[in-house]
Structure formats: structure tokens, C-alpha cells
Length: 459
Ligand code: C2O
Ligand code: CU
Ligand code: CU
Image (tube, protein in one colour):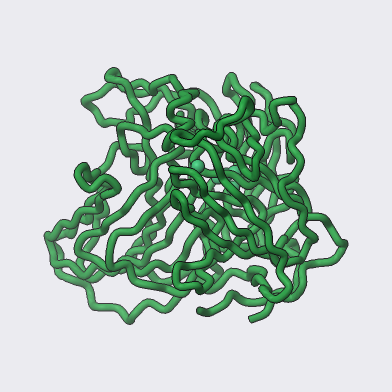
């Protein structure tokens, strides 16, 4: 497959020349209608009184400066999921910063080296803070954006509502933590009960950005009547490929699709979640207007690549990460339900049971390529997310797939990834099923600075 462009430049210089974009994100309790007019509104926690929070838009190379104002009654932080940034801006409590106390502010500032679809969410008690509505999209425009008729973002999520439409408060269910996580009973698209409407005209070309912001739900999306092109995973452009069947879409992941509207005027096509084939959720509806088709377009090329560090497999360091525990296992310890390499770290605090920083699971020299084999010895799937790097995942055919920041590891299967240890600091590795993350499946890796920039990647 095509490899991303090479660079020996440190990240900061990639961003030179961009604009500074100031934003304020206020996390606070709010009351919003999630189910439409026939139901009462729901008490949520929201950024700027919106679920999802505001889309933070910028151009590649710009710098974001975000004043985070915590008006919750709980500690919080914001993590900028998928963005390659300095460790101190990563939003991990107790590791990269002190948690932000109720009533306090914290200013994040970082450059945006990569174009694409990213997102933000708290990193304190994530299962609850995401589960109550704190998440939003960061959309970084390419220097030359592709020519499309519409650019639509769908944030998929779910919520567990009681019959008066309030959020069920039992976020610390041991059962959820030991099984598949907390699965909601209502699927949300952009904070509203699905199906969401995608209004199109025959012949149009739509860019559809998808994010799975659910704390636990693995979607299996089927787009009827169309074969969209996947042009990016987790923000980063890939060699485009066509979706001919349903695809799994796990928490944390993003996908950018190019959807050519090949249907006829007045046609309608469903977008379904068929994870449970006997109980399909209508996620969306592609709704064609009655207007005559616009002229056909040339085949789509690809998005301009981001400048990423290409893993150099010769001489790479190999490590293994064994996941154990959960329901049906016999592995839980006094400390955790789930274990990574025999240890289970929590927690709301990101500390171990003794209230100390856990030691990193691995230490790598900056610039070295790492191959990590994730061995899932549990009966549950785990979308494993790494902060501070992007990796290629090994495909079933043995080839190395597109760059991603979270990889889905199936029960009793292994998944290998390869990446360049990019910038110094302690970075999180965790399952993005938030209930797993906070009951053991969370650790760190350390990138030790060598006072040199990573080796020139090969193309
Ligand atoms: Cu979106 Cu540490 O995660
Ligand atoms: Cu992240
Ligand atoms: Cu998990």
C-alpha cells in the first residue's frame, strides 16, 4: 500500500505559519431533549450546553488554544483523542496534569500537525463523563480539501435512559465493567435518537465523517444501496477502499467516507447497526430529494496524506501485551477486574490501588519502531487505544494496514501493531470501552527522550 510522506522535521515546525484559534469549553450540567418533543428533557453533562459539544474547526497547521472551564461537581480534564501533541497537553489526570477541580480553568494549547477527524472527551471517570454527554469533534481541514457537495459529521453514541428519560445513574455497575461495558438503550446520532437524516440529491458526493463516542457499544454498520469509499481511519488518510458489506466500528474510532449518491430521486436507503442481526437499529436514513440528478463526477482520488513517522520494521523492538480477566475468567484480583501484563490499573484516578503512579508497562527510546502484539485472553472484545502515537495494524492477510489510534482486538485473538515512539513522555494505553479502562485495562508506556528527533521514515 502507499505509505505516508516522510519527514525528519519535529512536529512543531510542521505547524509553523498557522493561525491561533481560541475556544472556550465549559463543562457543566445541562438539560437537553434527546428523544424529541414527546418526551421530557434529560439532565446531561455537556460542553457549552450541547451534546455533542461544539465542533472545533481549524486548518491543518493551526494552533488550538482552549480554555477549559470545569463547572461540574467532579474533577475533570480534556483529552484530545488522536491528535499528536506534546505530552503536557494530553489531558491525563495525575500523569500529564493535575485534574481540573470544580470551578477551575485549565488552558490547553497545541498545534494541529494533521488534517482529519479527531475528538475530545474528559479523561477522568470517562465511563460517567462520556456517558452523561461530554464529547465533541475536532475537524481539521486539509490544506486542499476534497471537492464534495456536503461535509457531514455523525457522532454515534448511546445512552441508558430510564422511563422518565433521565440517565440511569448506576455508572459503577460491576456487571457492566466485567462484561461488555455499559450499553445504552437508546442509540444517539449527534445527540438525538436515531435515525438521523442524510438529505441528498441524486448525483451528489458527500463526505461523511463518523465517530463512535459510545462508552462501550461496538457498532456494525450497514449502509444500504451504496458502496462508499473509506478515505481515512482515525483522521489519517488511507489508500481508499470500497465498503461492500457491513463494517465493525468500535468506540474511539473515526472513519471518513466518500459517499456517491447513486440512488434515484425520491429514493430512501437505511443505515443500520446490525451488530445483533435479530435486532437491527436504524441509525440513519439517506433521503433523496425529488430533484433531477446532478451530473456524474470523476472517480474520487484520495485525501492528501498526513506526514507521519513510518514504522521501520528491521530492528524494531518487539513487546507483548497480554489482556486477561473479565467475566467468565478466573483472573480478577483484589485490585482489578481486568489485567494488562498481570497488572490492573484504575481508575478514576489513573493511580494504582496504593494511590501511586503505576510504572510504565514499557519504556521505548524516542525514534525507535515498536511492534506490539496484543494478546486478548478474555472472552470480550477490546478496542485498544494508544495515546501519543499512530500505529499500523497487521491485517489478517499479514500486510500492514492504515494508520490508526485504536485497534479492535477480538476475544481469544491477537492483534499486532507497529509504530514509532514519537514524542517523549508517559502515554496511556487503554481499552476504549470506558468501563474496562477504569477497572484495569489501563496502563502507560514511556518514551524516553534521546535529544534527537525520530529517524527519517522510509517511503
Ligand atoms: Cu479517547 Cu485515552 O482516550
Ligand atoms: Cu486518546
Ligand atoms: Cu475492553
